Image (tube, rainbow, N blue to C red):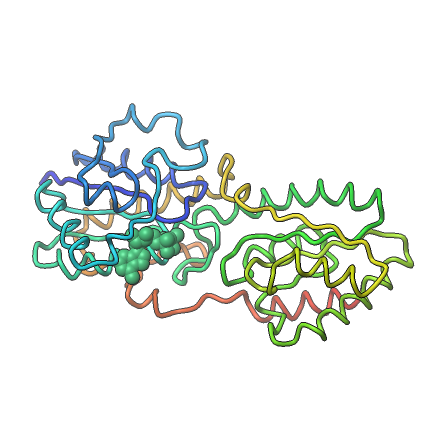
Length: 335
Ligand code: ADP
């Protein structure tokens, strides 16, 4: 039986979203399904602003960052009326399955939608798309690998100038409230210090500052630069405040850089493109199988595709592995 599949991208955009749109579209068309894309996240669903997705419309998009469907926040989804409107759109347009590519907020939107749509037996699927990698049920989210690569190459460049001046540099990376990006980037860049939620107690700033100053002093005797990778939202006042505190207390002339949205853009890495393609195919396979009865996320864990109940995913944390943090700390002690 032919089906109508709709896709939208929501919340923080992530490189690789286009690969997922492409793979859902091509897989759906191969099954003889119709495929449409809503623009601007849930806004397009509510406003019924959409396009028909054909093989032609997804040609040459897999290598592009961002999302051809655009992304947005949609405050209306936080209201009963807005969710009702979104569900009405799905019914009116005879959508059989909706695939949302986004992060935990977008998945909460799917849960809300489910309350209004379930009686029509529609299928709701989430694909994990966020650079922050903060969703359980998958090893990596779509966009994480690219963000780590982008930040790594940016910090490599910062390192050159830091080396030239033998100076301390604080580089702030994204990640919302976890250190997946900070730890991966810090390790890949050979940072002298990583300050993140997993290894820093936010109530213990003075002790952290003292440790940093001791480590910097030791390193400066070797005439080297000292790279600190700082997770966003960790330090009160951010990297600007940390720089001021270090500079006020010592002769250290630290500089800082907030990498910011550069981490969300750029051509997706091969890893993200492949992951997004696999997840898109798996989403359509799940629709064909007809086994998805509640909002479900499809992710990849240890090389295996995994379907998880979104309600459960939203209850879980995905911290950076404590063993990894510990191992890194002992490696740092050798510097
Ligand atoms: P992300 O998906 O990247 O985590 P957000 O947290 O901004 O991004 O969420 C994206 C959108 O998902 C929001 O603008 C809103 O439309 C929808 N959303 C988020 N939380 C909820 C919620 N609790 N109920 C309904 N919709 C939500």
